[in-house]
Amino acid sequence: MRGIVFYVIESLRNKHISIFDTTLRDGEQTPGVSLTSDEKLLIAQQLDKLGVDIIEAGFPMSSDGEAASVKRIVDAGLGLQVCGLARVIKSDIDTCLGCGVDMVHTFVSTSDVQRISTIKKSRDEVYRMAIDAVEYIKDHGAKCMFSAMDATRTDVDYLINIYKGVEAAHCDIINVPDTVGVSVPSATYKLIREIAVNVNIPIDVHCHNDFGLAVANSLAAVEAGASQVQVTINGLGERAGNADLAETVMGLHSLYGAKTNIKSQYIVETSHLVERLTEVRMPPTMPIVGENAFAHESGIHTHGVLVRSDTFEPGVMTPEMVGHRRRIVLGKHAGKHAVKQSLECAGLHPTDEQLNDILKRVKDIGDKGKRVTDADLYAIAESIIGTASRGKQAIVLKEVSVMTGNIITPTATVKATVNGEERLGANVGVGPVDAALKTVAGILGDYKVKVRDFRIEAISGGSDALAEVIIGVEDDKGRAVSARATNEDIVMASVEALVAAINQLLSRGDKI
Ligand code: KIV
Ligand code: ZN
Image (cartoon, rainbow, N blue to C red; front, side):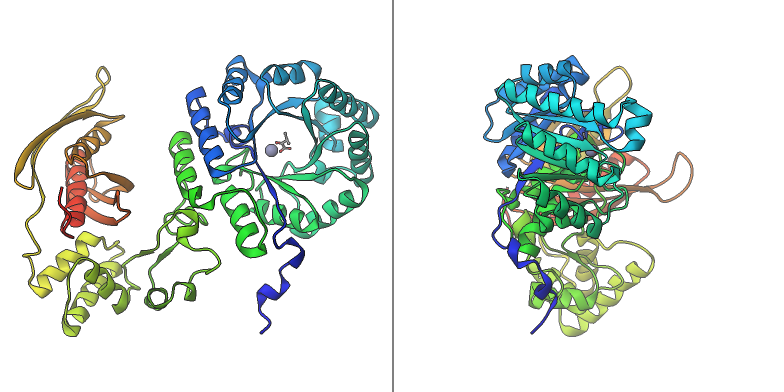
């Protein structure tokens, strides 16, 4: 059989590709993102756990705080190599070296447009500055990577000449940046091939995503002979960002059979950490890490996936491989199999006729443009099957109060019975909803739940509008449910939705 796999570049099978992560440098240049030194260290530690080979920890010359953060990451003694960015200027390089980095990444604009309009140097001057910088770094005993900034808009003969020059100056690796994201995969392939036949040191690529082609260009570069790719977590970076680590690495592993040191099972965990610390939210449709990356709604797809997951998933990449989970979502496209499976997981066994009625009600909600939460499904099923006796609610809310304002830290107290035993909790948060949800989670003792998804909508106008909260919750066994609640009070809607979700999880027989 000749399928698409037939065309995959066989020579990449088992080839090792090095992963250079620049989340802490180009990623931090994402408009609106600024990380503290503690946060940078946390991300560096997570990248180490993920198996990244080398990280660009920052641009030390940009501020004293940045230099201190880079030094702190170096001093943390992680397994990965630490690189710092420097212009082809001695003071930049000295500051980088002063942080104790393993590698200095030095760069200069080589395209006419940048050279003439920004640094105002001739081609010869830029050539000389590049060689001097590389020699200076090598004289100081550090590894050196040289980037010809805006390489993909640089005259190719001049570009190759400068790469040959830095090679002769003992540069360890050259980087080819598509600084403004204008290359296409076929052009990237040709350029990297041409460089590879002229230069004998390893080639790295740094692709920006202005046309959504950063990952495709990075993969094309690897096909053409690049042995290292620069990526960021969640595709963060200047403007539209850089090549995303998850997509690039899983493309290499699953589509080409190439190897990296990435432990892919930590990909989603890493994405969530960076999402939380940078506050740049990932769309649900984001490949690999997005909430919907392995979610199925249509009847045809869910039926297929329930029989055999690779009918409607890539197969060469499963949710388990990247630390994600498969989800069956119910809505207007839902099919009988998905509804039956969801109910059976909750211990409900409708007859065929009951199942048809439940399916109709689920589709009716979907037709109104609404999402069907697990709690909605169980309520419908119970009303049709008549099993409201699936057990008493484990958590019954008694009292909720919050204090908030501009002179106190938002604080919540919650009184509830948990399996009949009265419990009282208090906690603080970044806002009243956060404080209240943390307090509810806190009264559960050893049973741990995480809020994975939180959506709030006003369903009428005015400041007295009804708020509808839909919440997705996952427990420490990886089981996830969703629930909704409506209230004029946003805090109460949030707390009630969380309690409803936890009660759904606990109705499956767990004791707390
Ligand atoms: O996009 C770019 O060209 C860069 C360089 C510093 C490599 O980020
Ligand atoms: Zn960049």
